[in-house]
Length: 174
Length: 398
Image (cartoon, rainbow over all chains, first blue to last red; front, top):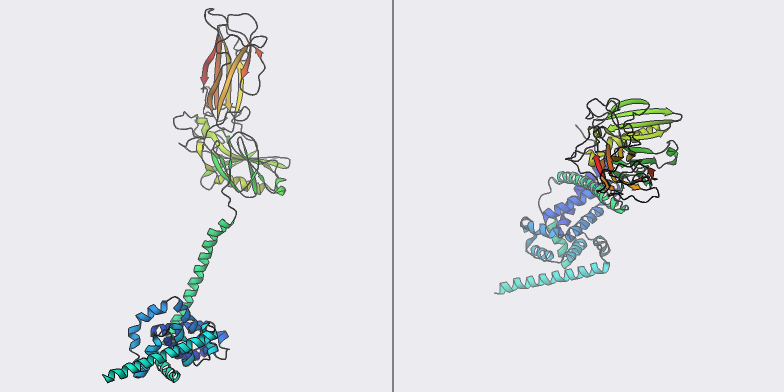
């Protein structure tokens, strides 16, 4: 038995193949949990699928899916659900961090210790390469707040990386 | 630059993680599960909305506790109440729901209904009456009706009680084994219809119960023209199908408190002297008789306050011990029976004796239907001058 697939369905499948990995990666950068990232990406794509007849005509349907994912993430954060799952999925997550190298692991560890909003701003700003205005729009924050969060986040990372370097060099001295 | 290092690290982190194999299959499952959740949530919303409206809407509506129309057996139509309401008639032993679109009023023998619609009212000649009645064994739709067959023509029951309705008769049965008997009599534009269903009167435990009371029926009576006949017939059927027996229609149930019997309504009162009964003047005793009979509705009541007053020609009371005697509570109808008939009648007999004075003697009835003018009466002979003349209760048959 064959099932006829519509053009829109085919188009969505192509979109899914192109965007799923990126969305899942974004999902991971936000809560740092692959299971949660998968859930966020799937949820974002399901909602995008429901709106597909309309979304497919957009210039950037991926931006729509990304916005859905971020909104979903914010929503889950509000319910403190992510944190609970984050803790539960910690062991599985660490198995995939070996390829980052020492510097990457230090930086990533520092990112994960950032407050949620600072982290989200940095992810969208430097992973998604979105302008600050777009980040502000996606996170529902004033532009000034986004600028402030980015500034403080970077400063904190610099501070942590500097301390780590000093600890490392101090250790060698001993 | 920290920004460049962040981009590189973010890229590596995001590209890592478990394999993405089967992601689209999971997506399909996810999508179907999502759709199911949406359906379930929608249904839940519908259920919640329905429950909420079921709870909230009645609260939002004006609070109208179930209105009741109590039939006390005291008066005629006083005020009309529009349905729906519950009409409670413990004296008649029934409870019915008056449907919307009809108005109801209490009468001494039950309820009367009339349509709220003026248009429909024009097709009725008077109200629809829901009352209790009696049918003789040959017509009564009740099984055996508790009779022994000697009442075939109803002649042995009080004549006012059993008068077979006129017209074409028919029989049938409502769902629930309620048998009905019906008569239709056409006169001009109006058809007079009577419906009866068995509604046996149950006496209270320990009270001897005349068998004739099992002949009570619940009946609907009305006069309607052809245009509204079907609609009013429908109402009658509905009332009789759904009427609930209460109080004296339920075996072992306590009865409602009874009002005093009212002559011409719940009882027919008759008073006699020896002279009027053609018993002839007694030489030693004069008798005064009160007879009370239930009416065809068998509405229970108490016969009270019957007596006699003895007077001289000027209207002054005679020197008689017990003169002006009044019996406070004589009997209960319809349970009372004199013995001569099967039920529904009582007899109070007073006697006056040993009158040792000359002059005219008169008497006046106390109680009963309105003021009674004095009437001449034959005095009893003097039997013992040393003893007082006395008036006393001779006998109560009830």
